[in-house]
Length: 184
Image 1 (cartoon, helix red, strand yellow):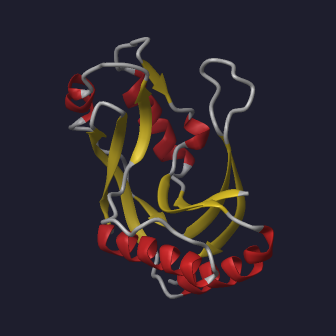
Image 2 (cartoon, rainbow, N blue to C red; image 1 turned 45 degrees about the horizontal axis):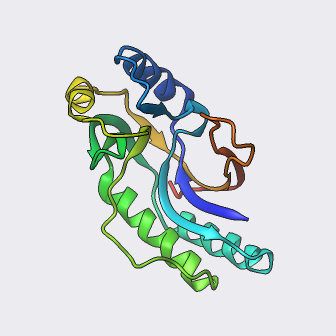
């Protein structure tokens, strides 16, 4: 199954972001992500073999237990080239980066081959491009966005089911398959 570790924003933060994104201009070259799928990926694991799940769960539980809860809020925006528009985070970013490193290490130690480690950039993807489009007007429109702070209290293991129907605009489906409380 295709898995990743994530921090999920609470419903109030999702509602604030929905209002901010809802005010942006429509463009057929952008595919907006479904708010049910909004998350901050900590460690993407890809396809994980079933026999590794028990060890992965134990190691993620340990990583969560060793990490204190932290404040977070949706903040600002950015983009990866002209491919993805995202909203960033502010608050306990040092702890979030530590949690991302621990989730990555948990997966590696559970026997999951992980991609080469890169510096963690906390982001929540709100749209992907379908062609050539400048995302600069969208990042400028969201640059001043400031969400209300919340306390991150758990790390989630999420299953990702990619679209298979071929229907244009179909979104991936996400299912939380495990969650572990952070310390504190």
